[in-house]
Length: 251
Ligand SMILES: Nc1ncnc2c1ncn2[C@@H]1O[C@H](COP(=O)(O)OP(=O)(O)OP(=O)(O)O)[C@@H](O)[C@H]1O
Ligand SMILES: Cc1cn([C@H]2C[C@H](O)[C@@H](COP(=O)(O)O)O2)c(=O)[nH]c1=O
Image (cartoon, rainbow, N blue to C red; front, side):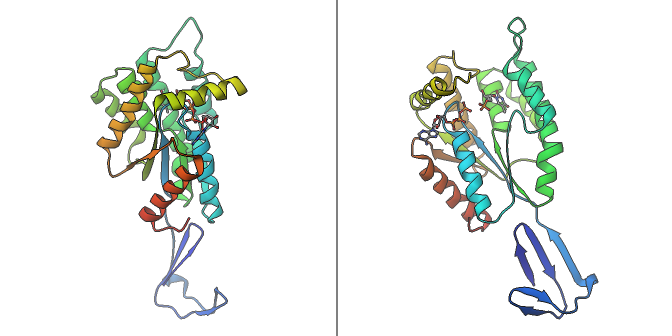
């Protein structure tokens, strides 16, 4: 017999129980009660600059939480105090000491190790879901395809830092580069937040977009591409449909 309560799965074997109003009453032989916490699902969100990852992650998070599931929303680089300090260096190195591409690779990998060890794995083990804005596919695209680190070297470092903790599901938000850049420009004019690739050419952003689509082709079982030119609620609805189909949930 099994009960699901939030993220907790209770399994009872060979025992007599009384059920009243959904509560478990009566005598239970504890040696025959298995208390299993099912691992939470690990979902990542990827895509180029300005496609809508932040808005999507926030909206999807609240929909999953409203369904009664525990969820931690996080992002990379970052997610723990140390990883956040690495993010500062990564995002804003001193102007007279710009980052070599392999330094970038080591920085995002170090931040990821810390993030996995201190935040992601402990939460998944306790049954909480983790929704992460960017993860290793960003490394494949930005440091690999964009930055030119050879794929074999990059995959070695990804394997070393991620180990068995590959995401269960990845959403790649995809849309026309000009649409995404218009969104970035509108956002920048309102909040003045800078971006690492503000000065990059449209061609470079096209390379990133194609890089993510290439990742989707390489990992078809894990990755789902969503059309991010649609309105935010439609994109989130499509993601939820996919989540329910894959994980048997009713979010
Ligand atoms: N589906 C959408 N339709 C229209 N506008 C959107 C949509 N999603 C996000 N936006 C707007 O586009 C801008 C960029 O969105 P957001 O910050 O979510 O993108 P991002 O992918 O997280 O960007 P970055 O890669 O720079 O972190 C914001 O001003 C946001 O309000
Ligand atoms: C994880 C990861 C990120 N990056 C880059 C991609 C973006 O330009 C920034 C993060 O900014 P955001 O506004 O939080 O999306 O970092 C990267 O180059 N490599 C990575 O592995």
